[in-house]
Image 1 (cartoon, rainbow, N blue to C red):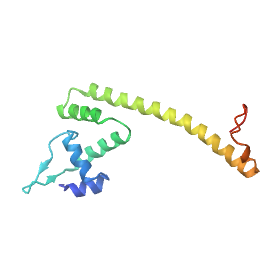
Image 2: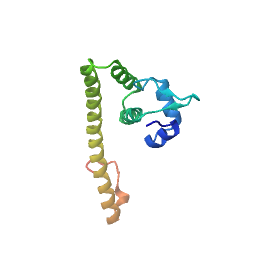
Image 3: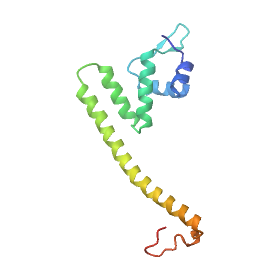
Image 4: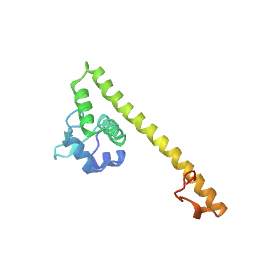
Length: 136
């Protein structure tokens, strides 16, 4: 199938501007085909690729790393260990971020419970008194 840029934007949730930006930044694995009128024409493979790039970007992968990954894919077979190393490094960064977020979430959840309890008891005015041992 062939899709125009507007349809790809709708299917992927990316803006037309973002799709053009991805193309300018060299994030696609090949050139974007153009029709007789010069309009971009995307394939199913292009859509699948741009969705992957968008997920990598949403997960915090820098554009330079996505570009490197696209370059490796564009080069073809033989560099799979390099691709794996790039993905593993990003996976490790995400796992570290998730651990830090989990610790933060636990602390915040505890504080929410404290505030809910104190508000229900009518003792919220005593929160954050600056005294050691307080639960605020």
